[in-house]
Image (cartoon, rainbow, N blue to C red; front, top):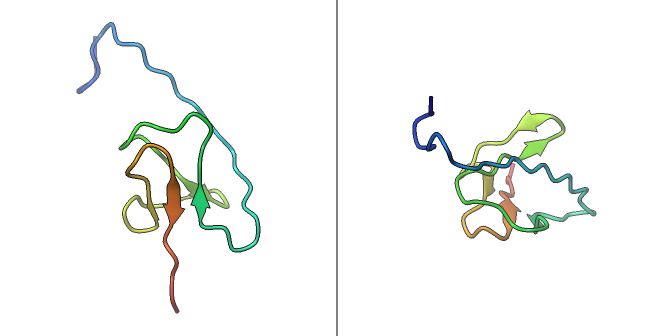
Amino acid sequence: MSYIGISPFGNTVRTVTTITATASQTSFTPTGGYTVGYCDVYYNGVKLVAGTDFTASDGLTVTLTILVI
């Protein structure tokens, strides 16, 4: 049995990378990069919304959106 978009014999690997930011850091480069469209970002345990809270579109860098209040 397969899921939509995943072949029944495909190899998939989930990688978890934890990055601790320095003061005012908004850009991160996960070791080994990531697959565009398959990057989940959490901030203090809350899942952020791609395209609204962060940008991850090049497979190398994740950039947090700066909110102006």
